[in-house]
Length: 130
Picture 1 (cartoon, rainbow, N blue to C red):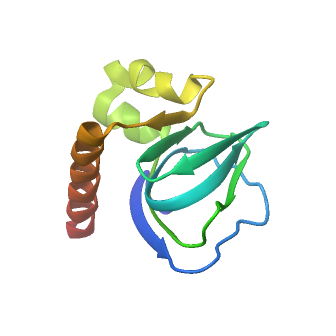
Picture 2: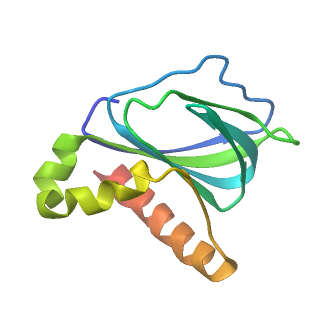
Picture 3: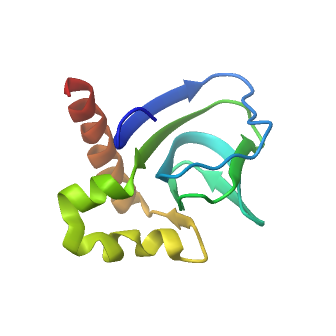
């Protein structure tokens, strides 16, 4: 990550396997827009399907592998403590509470899913404009 905030979209049409566990000193929000994956965070595995969001705390060891079918599209949001301190210092602990939750996975119903995807893709467009 080159900045203290980054958002990316990636689409994989074939098999995509992250062979090694890794960690980093920033927070990661992983949203699966299509496909299936299995996400490993620390000592737990999470079956991830379209519309699932994962919250990976900084320094959590993690990786992702294919689900039942190859191919997926995902949105990743990365940010640092410095970003939060600059933009929302008084709400930092509240905003990070999801990252500390034992269950890292959130699934949305259809109505929530439409809203979340609209917000995420709007964020992607705004980030590209810089």
